[in-house]
Length: 469
Image (tube, rainbow, N blue to C red; front, side, top):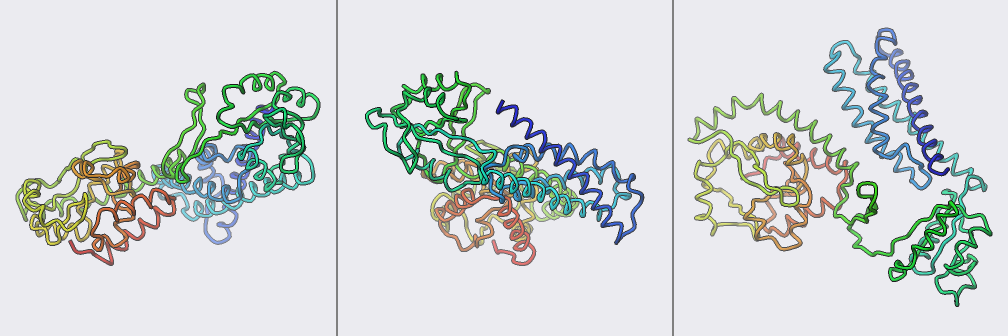
């Protein structure tokens, strides 16, 4: 029954969202028609054939069709902003290929703005309305807590702090029968864990939450079976501790085997999808620019020194994957052979190799590096999925061999064309540990807006603050 209710809620939410999307388009047309010249409405409605399925898909993967009982309002606004951004890219790309001249760009802009406001308002009002109903004693769920360990106390405190969730604790069961009396955090102890079935029959219980210590796990299966035979939902609070910087996720392998995952960084599936969409869009734009500049850059490289136009170097990517990183050649043809002879002049402490005024750099290469034009071919690596627009600097295999254990955290994500190190005064950084700390700081604090900030700063440094080589 509960699963059917969840599916019904998801279906109703999806239908409401699509109505809001259509209404937003009509409102956007009406607003823009007051200030600009537009054709009849039916000439533009074909875009809804694209928008409706795209928005449905995006809102589903960002969790906006699920129950938002425990979601903060910021989750709604941020998730919807991601939907609008990606949906806007899809819409504008579709218009570019289908009707580049006839479709009003202003109408698209109004549509994206109005739909964000309308759908966001719909979600917030629905959540606020349901929260108000729950605070007045309706649509609540009765929770029976089993356990009296710190996790049980923490669980009870969280429930008490969020009365808008509509969760009501009806009692507690202890694990020790000899102590099955008194109260826990102000809630009456109704017995011991052996009484879970009888208690569920005696009072109204919608869910049983087991908060048990790790050493109790081998004995809990019979109690699970007893509760499930009554048709009551039961949940298990896992008593595992993890470092605060690790993300935790409970999933089912092949829809059968429950697995608790601990992973580093803030990049979950939705974040990775959003980051990849931005990478593809940026890579396509970057390759177009590369194609325009290629004849001039190639001619300059060839006239300046002997050797190929492109330089491909083996680099280490995400979790140790090896790939060939492409650049426009900025050094003499035998630069790699000369590296060992120059190692004594290395000015970077640790695993990095860098020399100011490196004699291997050609005249044209110096200009390419100062303007970052030498890195344009890396947009091909981004399009292939080997790199990202923003990430950590891709190291060479020799550098990785010199890493300490904590240094390897910086290669747990895809490397980037630019990153926090590049926009944090890289010429003033003289130790690899500083580089690694900046990269790890980027991973721990990652957000879509941080990537945009780094990209903006990168463009500013390229055009207005050229760094010397």
